[in-house]
Amino acid sequence: MVRFVRWLLLFAALPVFAQQYDIVLNNGRLIDPASNTDAIRSVGVNGTKIAEIAARPLMARTVIDAHGLVISPGFIDLHSHGQTPENYAFKARDGVTTALEMEVGVWPVQPWYAAREGKALVNYGATSGHLGALMVVMHDSNAGKLLPRDAAVKRVPNADEWRETYNDVQAGLQEGALGIGLGIAYVPETPRSQILELFGLAAQYKRPVYVHMRNGGPIEPGVIDALQEVISDAAVTGASLHVVHITSMGLRQTELCLNIIAGADKHGLDITTEAYPYTAGMTDISSAIFSPGWEGRQGGITYHDLQWAATGERLTPESFARYRKVGGMVAIHSIPEDVVRLAMANPAVMIASDGILDHGKGHPRAAGTYARVLGRYVRQEHALSLMDAIRKMSFEPAQRLQLPNKGRITVGADADITLFDPERVIDRATFENPAQYSDGIPYVLVNGTLVVKESVIQDRTFPGTGLRYSH
Image (cartoon, rainbow, N blue to C red; front, top):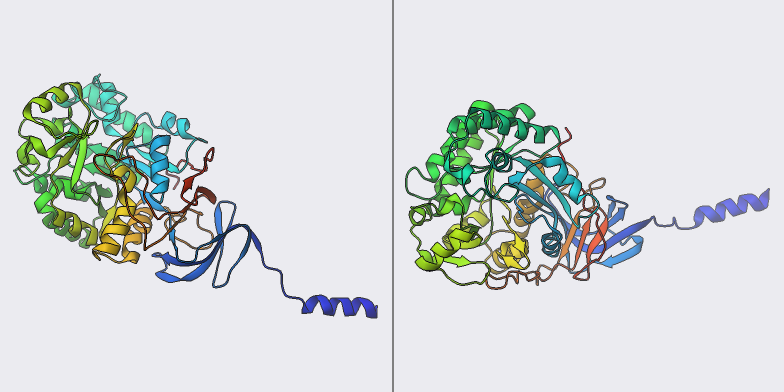
C-alpha cells in the first residue's frame, strides 16, 4: 500500500504530457479578423477542425514551423468561374481554400455538385444560375456553357419560357444552391419585372442574389441606373444583394457607386460588393457585352484595349470581327489604376477573382488575385493593412455566406488555413502568361488536409467539400 501511494505521488509530480494533434502550425503570426487577433500563436488541428490555439509550441504527427509566416484563415473566392482541377490547383497555390461560382451560377445544380464530390482540391459551391436555366429553356446555342450567345440574348422569353426558367431556378434553390446567380448584362432583353420576380424568389428562400448588373459605364442608362435597379429590387422584396466586380462596372463612377451602396447599407439593406486587383476585366467576345456601342459602355476604350486571351494579341477592327464570330475570352483593359486602388482600400469591398483558366489561357486573376492583394497593395503600396486585406478575403465572404465555421481561426472552426510569407508573397501571373503560380504561400490546409506543402500541390488529395445552403 505504501509503495502504491509513493507511485501515485511520483506520477502526480510528472509533467502533463502534451496533447498530440494530427497537424500543428508552430510559432506563426496568427491574424484572425473575426477576433481581431494579431499575435504569435501555435495552432493544433485534429481531423477537419481547429482543436487548439496556444501561445506555446504544440506536438503533432506533422509539425510545421510557421516562424516568419502569417497563419491566416483560408481565402474564400466568391466569384470563381474556373471550377476544374486545373483552376483548383491555381486557387490553392494562391491561398484559396473555397472557390465558389456565384455570379453566373450553375444549372442544373445537383449534377454539378455530384460531379465534384470526392474529386476537389478545395471547397466548392454555386448559386442556382438564371443564365444556365434560361439558355436551356430558350435553346440558346451555348446551352450548357458559361454565357449565352444568341436566342437568350436577342429576344424576351415568352410567358411559358419564363415560368419554366423560374421553376428551374427555384429547383436549384431546393437542391441547396447558395443563392441565385444573375448575369443581367448577358441577357439585356430580360424585362425588369422578371428580374424583380427572381429577387422575390431569393427573399422567399432567404438567400442572396449575386448580380452582374444590367449596364456599366457612364453612358445612360449606365451603371448608376443599373445599380439603382437592383437596390430597388432588394428594397421592395427584402432580398440580400451582392454586386459583383464593382470596378469593371463603375469605372470612373466607382466611388459614386460605393457611396450609393454604403447609403443603402446604412439604411438597412443587406448589400455587399467585391472587386479584383487588376485594371482589366475579361469576358466572351461573342456575348452581349460587345453588342454595338460597347466602346462607350466600357469608358471610351478602343479595339486596341482588347486582348485576345488565346494569343495575347491586341485587337483591331478586323480581328475583333473575326473573333466575335467564333467566340472566346478577351481581356478588356478599361479600369483605371486609381479606381482599383480605391476599391482595394475600401473596407466594404471584398476581394473576388472572377477568374477562369482553360488549358493555361485566360486572365491572370485566376491564378494571382490573392497574392497580388497581399504583395502589391498591402506590402508595396500600403493601400490597406494586412488585417484588413485578410478580412476582405476570408471573414467578410464567410459572413456573406452565413458560414460561421469558415473565414476564422478559432477552436472548432473548419481547418481551412493559409500560411504565407508577408515579405515574399506576390503574384506571378501575367496577361501574356497567366498560368503561373503565386509565390510566398508555402502551406495551405483544406478541411485539415495539406493541399499545398512546401509550395507544392499534393497529388491525389481531394479534401474539398461541396458547400450547400443548410439553414
